[in-house]
Image (tube, rainbow, N blue to C red):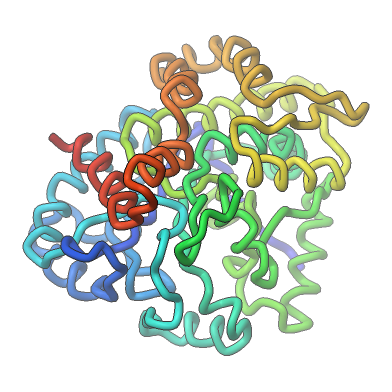
Length: 376
């Protein structure tokens, strides 16, 4: 099977930001995506920037093709400035956590569409459990032959991205003990989770052909890896991050992902063999970051060296400074260091729960208010 990769001559960006819809009063999930999308059509400068998702409690705000992190965040701010007042008029708030602390999966409605119905028909209970939200970042790559080496090398930094963005500690009214419960929930779906580490594009083509032939997937987009190629866009899509509730954190994470992909691709283009880790180390790092967040001790390389993720992150940010200068996102990349200083979302949510003696309505409210503060 041949899969063409529409290479991007420039390292462009695209961002997809998922939100849950919650009631302004009781803070429970509301299956009102169609109502919000319908009401927002006349307000948004570009209605195509707002999408529905699998469940009726979810909307996704997306950018177009952007040249810089600043451009992408500016687009999202512009869209959100119009969308939030529409949601207000419907009694809704937008919630940017990776999971909802107390919502019941059994009360959620499926969005209309054959693709969604087929997914639930196949996955049943696990599919209906997917009350999860995240951020996806596309980075343009120029050459098909470098896509898989860059993807495999990027997995070395999986735990850094997971720990920084972790925002799903509470599930069904219970603190799970995990920083990101979303990470482990999502991988239960067929074809989801960590990608295979192929060296060559032809191996990916063979894999995809086998998946289509055996009926595992009906189209390439149903390969739901945490990091995956998007051949029709000419991008590498990073789907590691939990939902994000502030523009500042979103800008920081997008900058880090942009710099990592561009750095790895530049090194590969120069003839460097990119460093990778065996799949068992990558898998363990995912679990450690999901479990311990910013306190995770992660595996660094194929020699099994280990280090506290925040210590390694500090050195990584310094190493990426020249890349950020070239991409015009130096300030945003530097702000990544603010997340450990101020506390990641999972830490902030737990702090609210502790202060309020376990009031999960207050936890949802705190996440909602963080987003609104960025629009003030």
